[in-house]
Amino acid sequence: MKNKDEKQKDIDALRRDLERSKNLFVTGYEKLRVNQDFELRKVVRGAGGKYRVVKNNLAEIASQGTLAEQVLKGLRGMTSVVYSETDPVALAKALTAYAKANPTFTFKAGMVEGRAIDIQAINDLANMPPKEEIFARLLYLINAPAQRLVTAVNAVGRNLAVVVDQGVKENKFA
Image (cartoon, rainbow, N blue to C red; front, side, top):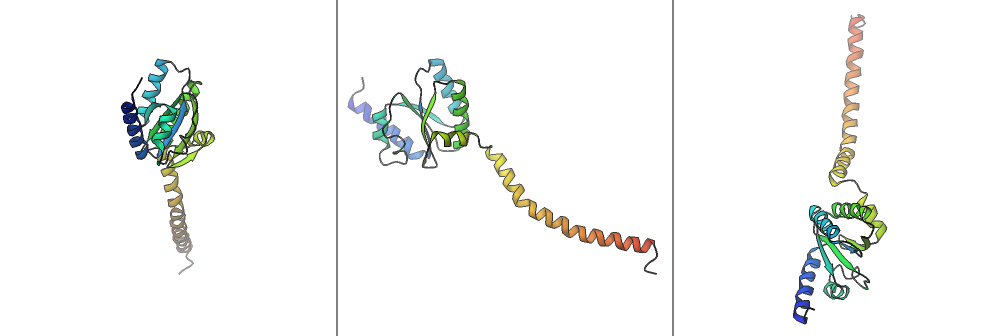
């Protein structure tokens, strides 16, 4: 059993992590075997996140005054937190895929860019296309009107050239 100083160190370490992280997923891991937990940690690291098993009351204390305060309030059961400072979509995709393969792993709540989200929003986030695809679509939408304008402007010149060429061939300008 940890003494008060060790618990305070755990609280301080968790508080530092929570202050840096804008993206957080609160999960339940009941009946997760050791090999499944090891695989989960590997998946989270691969997605650029960090995974930590927490005591509910210590997590609530550590979250006071941070963006994660409302997400970590009143937790019940076995709880773990997965957090990231970078891409929440990649982390949500990885966790959702893991949850489908391991039904004992569940979501309790989440926070993306400092805003609390529910379980449905986590699933919606996981179904989003990758960031690169979104950027490609956006660039296409930005570029499409300019391409249409250039095509229309070129069409006028091309049509005029065709009419003049036909007129010359048929000696209409002589």
